[in-house]
Amino acid sequence: MKAVILDGFTTNPGDLSWNWLEEKCELTVYDRTPAEKIAERCKGYDIIITNKTPLTKETLSQLPDCKFIALLSTGYNVVDCEYAATRGIPVSNIPTYSTAAVAQLTFAILLELTNKVALHNAAVKNGEWTDCADFCFWKAPLQELFGKTMGIIGFGKIGQAVANIAHAFGMKVIAHTANPDKYKDAENVDFTSLDELLGKADVVSLHCPLTDKTTGMVNADFLGKMKKTAYLINTSRGPVLDENAVALALKNRDIAGAGVDVLSTEPPKADNPLLGCDNCIITPHIAWAGFETRERLLGVLKENIFAFLEGKPINTVNM
Image 1 (tube, rainbow, N blue to C red):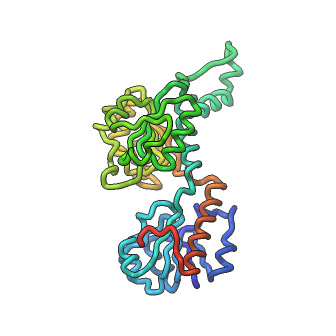
Image 2: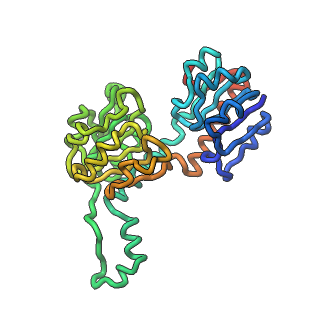
Image 3: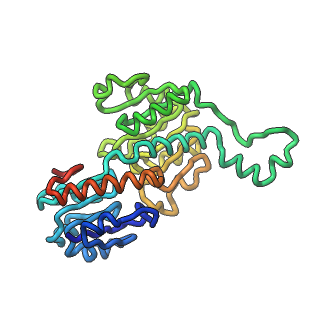
């Protein structure tokens, strides 16, 4: 079997190993693959491994040798899964590998919004504490999370993990999901309508999948229902936000602030409206990037590929 990895660098920039795959397959690894070289680099390979490099119907139709597509991600919209199925090509993703990491970054962003650690560290390093007449100072209002209300939109594994951490901080948790009955046994969570959640939450944290219904869900109407003192956090998918509407709400102080780890286009264009908002924290899609998280990802990839080689593919999203 021959295998090719089209964009391996972000998953494994050199601190992990592909040796286990090299022992099973003739392997070629590319750090990145530009659009014009995708078909060329995939030709002749049985197994194609991709993270964000797209495999369209047009590309796949040029690859008669392709027998299996292994994703380096949970999301699978970069592959034309329906067409792959017509060809009998299973597509396997990496489910639930980043639950703890995404929940952790959600609170890293929230704590930066409420405690402004980076701001105060920079002030101290710039000599402001040395020159201060008092034993302490603060450059912006600081807030406790205790007693505040966390509103979670989407209550899958990540949403549940965020709820558990919120409880540890002494927060009240309310949630909105399309299937509340599925979680009727969840403790210390009140399920509610979206409008009620937006009106009550001090923090609105997005953990929903990207669908036709959720694309652009966070628009002017959505933001207008939030408290002016509330924070918006998005560690789900960038297109869930209408970024122009969010930027306007931030600049008008219609909401207190926002933190996002994902944007509609990645890397962002220089004119992305959120880049100019001083009350918006933006991290470069790093929730999944911890060493342990990527190590776990490769562990699931290994299971997926070995299962395929044994004729019993797992974690398939199109069959």
